[in-house]
Image (tube, one colour):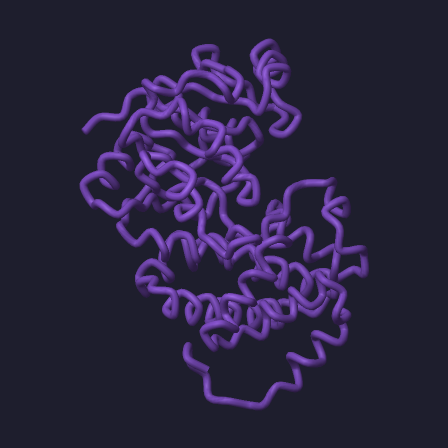
Length: 332
């Protein structure tokens, strides 16, 4: 099972970073922008304002999203979670039967409550869905700094072959068959990162930050178990690893958005330069899915209430601090 011709759909920061990593690994890479004008501009300049200072290698082929994909496998979908379905439907006629399509977005479709591989399975019934997730910033990956992630699909042999095809010395995918666990970690940690950012923006101190991250991870763990994730996945790169990264760095869009909220700024991505904040879209559906299965997630619920204006930051903090004292444990 070989994967030499790889396509990346989406020429934002993450798509460009992935194209750089795959090119560095010696693969033939097609990078698809959303339209012809964007593709022409990127082809001429070989650099994007979304990832300034990073130049695409000359042998990375750049084309519009309607480019032929019939000879490419796998297809990496570096598309925001809420746009994943529309992009998948656009490429559906061009895919070959049995091609692997890898979701590289960390979120849950807000309208349907479906995870990204479920969206891909519905939009691309001829494809094999997979997911790539873990602690990674686009700029680090693009620069060739050491990064480790998790790549999951249902069949272990295919997951292993894909990890080998995508991997290099500095870009290391660990393979798994726990697709759901990988997706849950990537989606839930964005909401927790907003909470951690709020703590930082409110200047509540390092002790409070550690408490929110730890108890937030307990919420992620409970949610994951209820939806069939394996414990080792939740405590691995795509779970705990991503929580550690995004809940502690201003490079995280979700964390930076939370900092803005904590400082009393409006709940608008414009507060961090208009950048995509996946947790903003995931919080509500995550809380709804938790309530459907009786999963207690007070931190995630507070984030959603702040985002939607149902409560203030100070009210949410007071509510969390006045919860009953209990024994510590994942199930509490």
